[in-house]
Each structure stands twice: as C-alpha cells, then as structure tokens.
Amino acid sequence: MRIIGLTDLHNRIINFSKILKLKPDLILISGDIVKTNDYRILNVLKEVSKKSPIFTICGNWDCQLSSKLMTDYGINIDGRLVNFKGVNVVGLGGSTYTPFNTPNEYSEEQIYSNFLNTLHNSKLNNLKMNNFENLKRNFILLSHMPPKYTMADLTEVGYLGSSSIRKIIEEYQPFLCACGHIHQNKVIDKIGNTLIVNPSYNGFYIYDTISKDLELYDLY
Figure (spheres, one colour):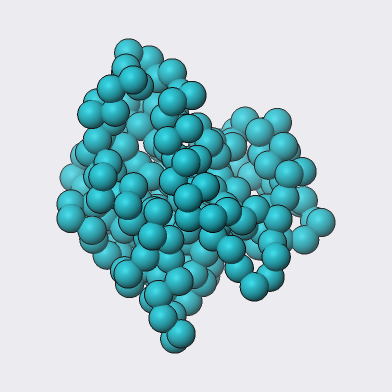
C-alpha cells in the first residue's frame, strides 16, 4: 500500500493534483490544517477524499470547529485507532504547551494519557485492545508532535519535541511515526526500529507498507 503524508497546511490551498497523480492508497495529514477562521482547506480535503481516502488529526492550531468539520467530512481520526486495508493507524493530535496559547495544547502527561485512552476506547475488528501486546510493532502513529531528541524536533534553540511521544514509540514501537509541528525540518530519523518522518510544511513523503521504503519530496 502506498501512503502519502503531509503536515502543517495552515490554510494553504495546495495543488493536490500532484499528490493524486502519484496514486496514493491513503493520504495522512499530521495536523495544523486550519490556523485562522478560514475553513476552505477543509472543503478541499473533503473533495480530495472522494478520490483518495484521507486521515487527519488536529494540530495545536486546529480549533474545535476544525475538528468537528473534519469529523463531519469523515476524515478525522484524532483520538481513534482505525484499520485501513490491514494497516492500523493511531491518531494523536495536539501539542505540548507553546508560547502562543493555541487552541489545542496539552501537558506531556495528558498526551500520554490521550494515547492510552485511544487504545482503551477503540474496538478494532478482531484485535483485542485489552491486550496491548497485539498492537506493538503493528501500527502507524499519526501525531502532530515529533518525538523529543530526534532530527524531527531539532531547532536552532534545541529539541522541541514531546517526551511522551518518544515514550510511546519506545514502549509500543510503531513501524512509522508520521509527525509535523516543527516547520523547518524535512527529515527521516529512527528510534529503534520505528521510522520517524517529518515532511515539514513544504514537503511530503511516500511510504510503502510492503517494501518499507520511505522517501521525502518537495511539495512545490
């Protein structure tokens, strides 16, 4: 299966024809889709989802109305564990606290708790969610925050990622963590066997679930 991923659109109406020409089986978007009270990008995603399935989560800038519209359009998996063509995807949105007092911020403890609540509240086909061992090494973590101390969260002022996201990766070992939030980093990194990808606001990635190949490309 071919997965194409983006992040941090921030209201930008990008040219999705370039993405669709690559024939994705699934499009993942790691949050911060809407930044101001302009929801046109969500209408674009609604139309694109008729041609290719889309899974989104909320970033720290996405407000309750953004989340509701994404849910109404059938693309929001924030706080959910879903199975798509045999691939498990866990959606974990929001960010840690920022200086900007954005609408969707949490403590590190809340982020970790949100992940556990997602597992507890999910019923996924025949996967017994009361046994988390069934999920380990067998899912994609779609998060807005990158894990701490990686190339995906490194900035000129230090590492700005989430220690809870890193803890989740170390404990549950998803085969892919698709994140965003840090705009300047278009990178691929690893924690153990988990691939970490942050395509940045001006890039996208292609991941093949069979070959495990992961590559980054320029959006423009």
